Length: 220
Image (cartoon, rainbow, N blue to C red):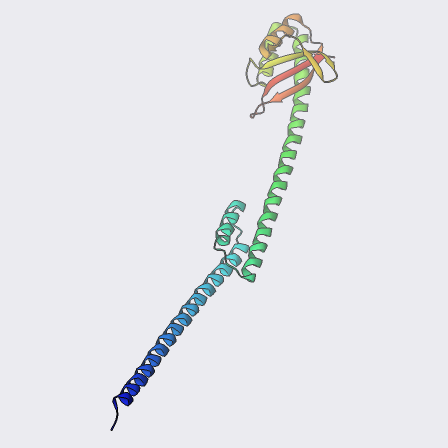
C-alpha cells in the first residue's frame, strides 16, 4: 500500500517534469523567435545594401544631372549609413567623379573668364584707338557741323552723355593726380571750341553693354 509520502514524492516529480517541459518549450519558443527576428533583420539589411549598390551604380552613369544634383543624390545615399565594403567603395568612386567634374567646371569657367578678359582688352584697345582718332578729328574739323557729326558718333560709344572724364595731371609712383572731373559731352564741346586735343587715352572702363562709362586722359 502506497504511503502518503510516496504519493507526494511522485506528484512532486511529475510537477518537476511538467515544469521542465514547459520551461523547455518557453526557451525553445524564445530561441525560435530570436532566430526569426535575426533572419528578418538580415534580410532587410541585405535589401538596403542591394538598393544602395543599385543607386550608386546608376549614379555613376548619370550624365544628365548637374554636379550639385549628383552631390545631393550621393549625400542622400550616404545618410543611410550602410556599413558595407562594396557600398563604401562605390560611394568613394562617386565622390571622386563628382569632385573631378567640379574641378573641370571650375577650370572651364576660369578659361572662359580669361578669354573674356582678353577679348575685352582687344575691344578696349580698339576703342582707345578709335576714340583717340575721333577726338583728333573733332579738334581739326573744318566746320562746327563736321565737329558736331563726329561728337554724335563719339557719344554713341559712351553709356551716357554724362559719363565721367578724368584728366590725369601727374603720375608719381602709385600716386595719380587728376584735374577737375568733367563729363564726355562737356569735354567734346571743349575740344570742338578750342580746336585742340593734346591728350591721349590712358584708360577706359566699360559697362556690361560694352559702352564706355569712364574715360581717363593724360598729356601726350
